[in-house]
Image 1 (cartoon, rainbow, N blue to C red):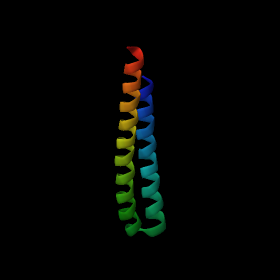
Image 2: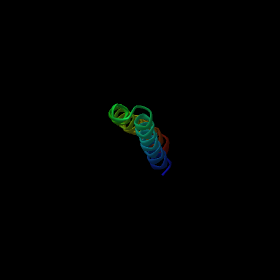
Image 3: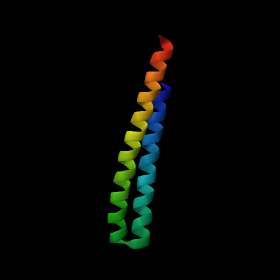
Image 4: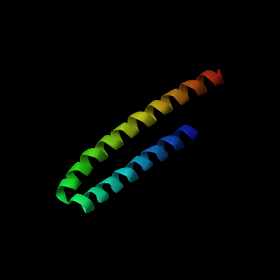
Amino acid sequence: NGAKAGLIAGILGAIIIAVLLLVGGTVLLGAFGFIAGVGTSLIVIVSAFIYQGLLSLIGGAIAGAIRR
């Protein structure tokens, strides 16, 4: 349950950061900022998924080894 909670917290955090990047880029630079924000947001979300997935994999492997 702890791994699932950490995974969801990391993904929600990445989504919030992506939204803030979009809003900030649009406010400061207009349409160009929006396009740049979309690209940056996609990179942030994809890297968060990969990072959280790796952490969950490592945590699951450690928990499986400890339980045996």
